[in-house]
Amino acid sequence: MIDEVQSTKLPNGIVVLTEHMPGLRSVTAGIWVRRGSRHETAELNGICHFIEHAVFKGTRRRTARDIAVETDRLGGHLDAYTTHEMTGFTTKVADVALPQAIDLLADLVAHPRFEQEDLDREQKVILEEMKMVEDTPDELLGELFNAAYFPNQPLGRPIEGTKETVPTFDHKLTVAFHAREFSYNNLVVAAAGNVAHARLVELVGHAFDGCESGAGARPLALDGARPRAAAPILIEQKNELEQAHLVIATPWPDALNEDRYAASLLASVIGGGTSSRLWQEVREERGLAYSVGAAGSAFSDVGVFNIYAGTSPEQLEEVLDLSLSELRKVVREPVSDEELRIAQDQAISSILLGLESSSARAGTLARQEIIHRRRISPDEVIEKIRKITVEQLQEMARTYFNSETIALGALGNLNGFNVDRSRLEI
Image (tube, rainbow, N blue to C red; front, side, top):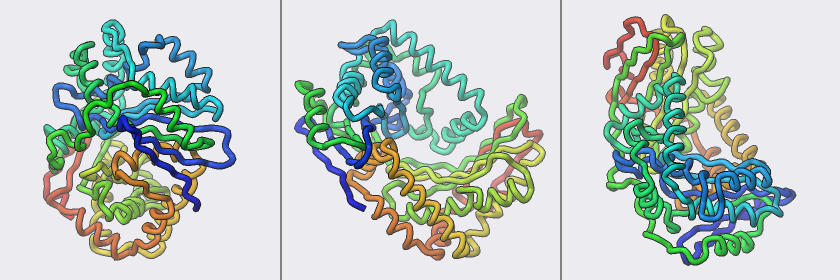
């Protein structure tokens, strides 16, 4: 593959990345901030997500309606999101509209007004968003379990904040956090599609001209400490639910660990697709669940492997035993060569299909810059995936699937469901 990625760091600290995709008449462009919920104190939990919302209420040059009208004129694809480690604002536009898109994105990120009346309304919106989570069992279990898995730590706190913190985000506090953490040294601008690197650098330089650079980017964890995972057994009764929801978790390689490629393939074998062990055993062979699977989450300094299933309360015990059985199998016996090849083919196909999407490419550029501080080409990833062996997968299983570190969460009308640690032995 021809790598058409270019990178420039501007004097004000902003990193500009482009990937030219021949044959397109569109561009996906975005501004990513090297800040997410894990960079907040407990008192400020949710403020990155709050700012992500609040910037759309108006800037020094645009009202909220101006932003909405301009978004529609550009194609209506403006999106924003917050994760634990970054906040992103992206849009997909026709190539001729790139100057307007960059001007709009830069205005949103750099010059929000944060009027108190607007902030009061947005607080209500986010409180309603929290209620949606409470009404969505798998998301609710995820938040409850995450808090128990990373107790009293930023990664364990909800991205959207809490009912206690969000109402405190007034004009003064929000402006101060934005000025400090959304500084130019913490911004990454990335674009993929029919885009010329020099032109994007020019547009970004003009859009952010004359603004202070702010403080330098700080390490990802505020206190510099590596997150400490617990091994909780969390059983939450919720009588009104028709299904019981189950999560099993273990530590996993982080995003910078070279073992992440083997770990990803192992997760795929266990529960990453319709041919995976869990899908075949739990859903196809026994009909115990509609939704069942496994995947790893990789942060910059810690990883988590999860098995998830939703099933009837009376079948929860069987689903738990089947899930634990699959973990024990991969520890004791190597996966088959065929299973490895299926997982490799699946991973490589996903990478190649992603190359057709300017949105996927722009997002990958930004994430690699923020997490890895370097470009990782698709060829490099594919080469490493192809070199993984069944022995490496078993080594991953033996390293990370341990009785002492395995954790469990369950939510629903559980009818006395209870688990002690001896049940979780691997």
